Length: 83
Image (cartoon, rainbow, N blue to C red; front, side):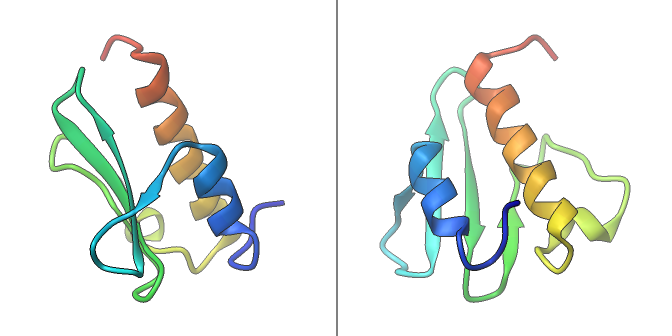
């Protein structure tokens, strides 16, 4: 299970790197001209504007499911699946 305690390990495995802000981890996708980020201080994902959300529950990491949604978005972007 992905939790707040092991999330940094998951981010590293997914190819994220610390940004200049020590609480923000980022991964760039040149093929989509965007970046996905995770702000660990604010406990929230930072999605590009092109990624729409149907609810606020995916805009924070308060529930374990939100980590899974974030990893799914990262994986989809990494596979370069058509939109």
